[in-house]
Length: 318
Image (cartoon, rainbow, N blue to C red; front, side, top):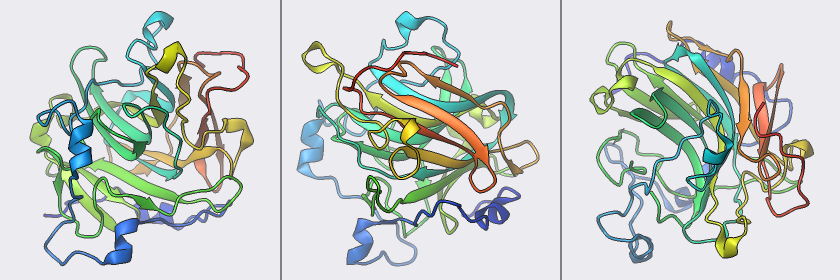
C-alpha cells in the first residue's frame, strides 16, 4: 500500500540548501546489514526493556497522556503532570499534516522513569477531554513510561524495510561540532483519509488508518513542534534531565538544538510555512524557546535547556 498523494511542494522545499550546514542521519543497525524487500525491521525487545515497565501488560504503553497546552491560563495546572515543554505551535485553522527538520542530540536523563523528546504533535479535539494525537520525532530515555510507542501495539502500519521504529539514530550532534538532523513529515491522504509518515525525502514509513481516530478523521485543529521532558522531582528538586542539546536557545547553531523548515499541510494538500506561530513553555528559566524566520531555514526555532543553572527570569508564555 502506498499513499495516493504526497503534499504539493514537498520536493521543491527539499532542494533548498540550509545556510548552516547540517548532515543526514542513518540508524546504527544499518552498519550490520539491511532487511530484505517485503519485510520490515522490528526492534528486538530485550529482557531489560520489559523489566523497566511496571508490568508486562503495560510495557510499551504511555503511562499518562500529557500534551503541551499553550492555551492554558492557569499556572497552577502547568506542571501538574510532571511534564514540561518548550514548543512552537499554530492553531485556529484546519490542518492536514506537518513537517519539520529536527536537530538530533543525546540529552542527559537523570532518572530511569524520565525522558527527553523532540517531536511534532498533530492534535484534534479538546484538551482535558477527548483529544486525538499523532506524535513523531526522536526520544532519549530509559523508557518505562510509554497510547503506544512504535510497533508495540496495533495501530501504526509500517510498510518500509529500511527504517526501524525505536532504533538508535546515528550519528548525533556534538556541542560546537558537526550537526545532524532528521526530517519528518506526517500528512493526511486526501483520497483514503489515512495519516502517513515519511522520514527524510526517501522513506515512506507507513500510516495510521483513519478508523483509529474521531477528530483526526477529518483534520487537526493544532500543530505543535518542540521538546518535552518528564520532571519527577527527584529528592524534591527539579530534575537535571536536559531538553534538546541541554543548552538554552540564545547559544544558537551548533550549541542549542533547533527545528527548521517547519511547515503545515493545508486543505489543498499544499505544504506551506505556518502563519501566526506562537511559542510556549511552562518555565522559561528551565527550558526556553525562541523562534525566527529566514530564507534558508524558513520558519525555525531554537529550544531546550539544562535546568540546574542560575535561573533566568520566568516569562511563562508569549
